[in-house]
Length: 269
Image (cartoon, rainbow, N blue to C red; front, side, top):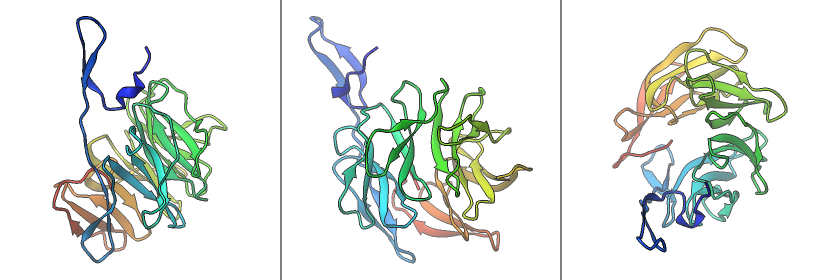
């Protein structure tokens, strides 16, 4: 099979004319935008275009933002300055899916997942652009990568055992290691690098943590969306179950409070 790249990465329901010369298809248009909250304060539109812009990720030094955008006609990874200016395209894979860019601790690389080879695999690319390096090659789906705080490992969710579990790969230089046994998808280390926080399943699920050196897992939050949480030094920001608010769970007090209400349901945090 060969992809018809001119149709973009959201072409649906194809139909061919009787003479075989014309192809008709549908293409849903979404205009997602990236918003920012300067706390305390209301949400404000931050990065936007006539196409979708989403999954924004700050660089470790706070000077740049990586995000997914369809402004070139197909969704790719872009990077801009911290104020949203000077956007530049990083990847040109023209794949059905490219997503979840996450920065390496030194701010030089971006790990992301893509379905360019047919299934979703993990890639690494320079934040300044260049040829992406494919990290995983297993025929199962590997998705939502994140770096360990020391930069030695890339965590990701995978279906290679028949059930979604968290794995980690030494950046393409060795064999991937399974981390969780009781289910897991997206995973991120704590700021001090001592714990790994991970979503149990895809969709609406619970959040758990496990020591990075191994040990017993414990439940942290009962209800999150598996990709919509961010680990900070003082606690966890996450998307509430109503889909219209951002909440904060404090490590110090164990309490949760509402940070902001959103007029419409949002997709990613």
